[in-house]
Image 1 (cartoon, rainbow, N blue to C red):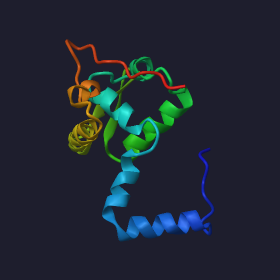
Image 2: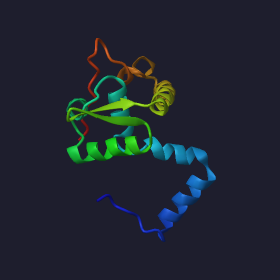
Image 3: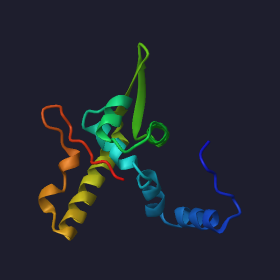
Amino acid sequence: MPYQRKQVSTNFINKAFLNDDCIVDAALETFTGRWISQVLVCIKTGSNKFGLIKHRLPGISDHMLGLRLKHLVDNNLITKNIDEGEKTYEVTSDGHSLVGILENLARWQSKRLGLENTALACFNSVEGSAPTFPAHN
């Protein structure tokens, strides 16, 4: 069961205030958790099954991947399809819109860091073989 903050904690109250007061903070909550944007991009670039995503993101645990897929489904960024017992995931219209925003964010950050030639490497697939994200220790 995921950790639930106490509803009387200062952190919970502040987070609720910020999300109610600023639509940007509420939007950021949708994709800023660990692995969320990477999982979304994997699905967008063709890795649409649990095992394929896991292969692309070698540092993510099965448990965390399951949580992130559920988060993306719950936030209408991907859909989960089951056909003859096989689960696949597909990016929704909202998910595609978010990927466009993430691409712009990647360009912005890459420019700030002087890495402009690598800005969108993780967003593109070549001949159906999407790039692998590096494992983080």
